[in-house]
Length: 351
View 1 (tube, rainbow, N blue to C red):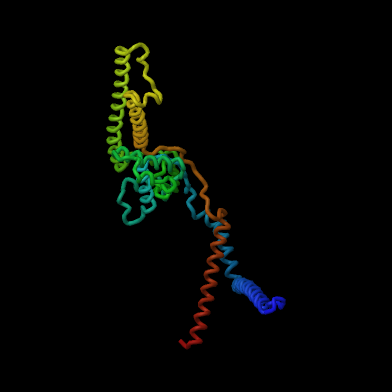
View 2: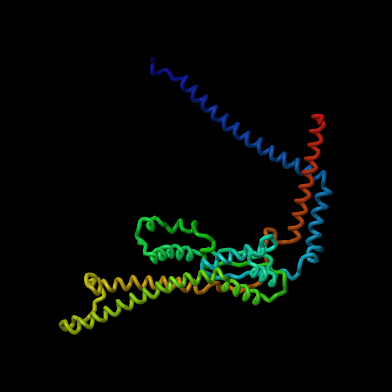
């Protein structure tokens, strides 16, 4: 084979492959534009359909606007207001708060007499709807994460096991319930002319004196108070031992040996061991007292109740009801179109 002769078949194959690739892209672009044109054609047909029924479409749209402008202010209760407040509570109180909200929202159902006292309170205050929403703070996620470890330590579990090493804080938030967050936003719809301060006072009084909350709080507080007493005893005993050791060293040892060294050099001594245990007990005492304070509080106000303007997706009522009228007109037009299709199908198949 002569090396000077050009390899024309190979070049022809490369050119064919390039042409095929260009044709592939060209056909793909054409296909995209054809699909776009079909969408545009469908939109044009839809506009034509509305044009044929313009009297119905414009009429219902105008009726919606007139309802919002004239009839809605007359028909709706002028005393209806929306209030909002932010409360802080422990998980036990939060569970009762969410349960009470569910009872209020379902108070007209057949099982509304499950909590007669709560339903009676809601009716007396004119509360027709109650929504509770957790205020998700990073601080609460961290506190709840470490509370799991602290509660485990109260049960005597070791906190340096493989379980707690794998208990990552990044995944902890996804496992938390809404009731685990300390701050809760409460939104109320009220249809009576009652002072907001009275609504707040009676609502908090009911929640904080609920039998479920009181019993659970008393049980938790009894356990935590006993544990707090033991931690205080341990700290006091260590302090007494340290004082006794210091006095003993002062009376028996040479001059200058009565000083109690609190540094790294004392870690191998009895004093160093006692100081380390004292630090551990003080940390546990702090955690226990923090949990006691949480269960003693119940439901507390962070932001006082105040009236708000409830926002919707479409804020302007005229625009909102005009769109509702337009939507109703679209449904009627599509139903009429579907009815014509059924009639045509019936004639073609002689049904």
